[in-house]
Length: 240
Image (cartoon, rainbow, N blue to C red):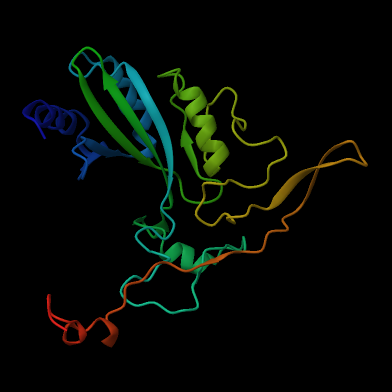
């Protein structure tokens, strides 16, 4: 990370003290985790303070950390029966809470919102992450009053993750249908969905019905180390 971003990191840490914590980033982007209760205050300062001047919001993205780091695939050893990737729509509350990532005061943290900011004045970028309040539905303050570009981004996060943004002027679905059930980017959402849509010629309209697709079982490609691949069984080059 270059010297300019390191100077920015020091300035952000000094300005907001205990309200933000720097997060390590593998992609080389400067990232801070901000307390949900201080989100609006921090964002206003980042936009208005001459030292920062992050006047442009590039993106807002929801994140579901359910079973973060866990994989459905077993790569070191595998069975011939395959691996079910289907979901039955029922969430085991105990296992979900255990795998929901970090926690604060005993409460599991599952949903977060990530903000990508750009300072046109200083030609610098900053990424913020704020955890939603525990419970259902997950909630966080809206930043529409700070950056108007957040309007559709927050609607998208609401539609796909079910995150409620307090103070949003028009929080409704933006990508799915009006009668859509659930939030399709949640990790426990059934891969085949909850309902399917088709046109009924007899009724002359589109109808909704239960999903008729059975959960699929997929088998990954696995390279096994057994006697078929033993070096002793391979003929040396140019012999045999």
